[in-house]
Image (cartoon, rainbow, N blue to C red):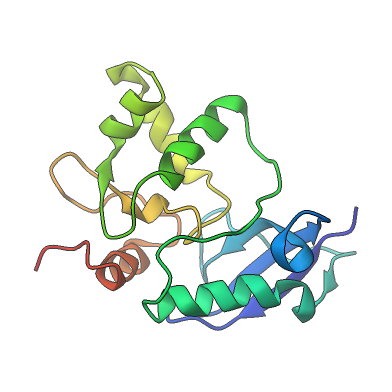
Length: 168
């Protein structure tokens, strides 16, 4: 199946959206990846992908509403990806409310792994292909410090600031 893509502007810079056609997705596109500029491990446009701005109209609308402070939860269908463990971790991320933070340790507890599993949780979070919409930016260190964000700590701080989740 051919992937479609689009680049959209955001307060974080140009976002690369990658998706595929889905009969069940609002707007007709299931999101495969959302990458920030300079993202570690971010998607790169591949030969054979087709640029299709219309495929991302609904996703773009939701992103614009989020960045304007009007949307607190995305309603976007995601394409299946990741290992079963990664999917459990990513599901736990989706349950972290807008404007709140959690820790890597708390996510490890939610997915039922031991304290030793915190590193594995961090690795799974680092492989999240859907930055912003699957809110891995809401995960911070136990000491309250911003840690590890594939899109960069500056972007993480901007997203948390937008959501009112950073202490002044």
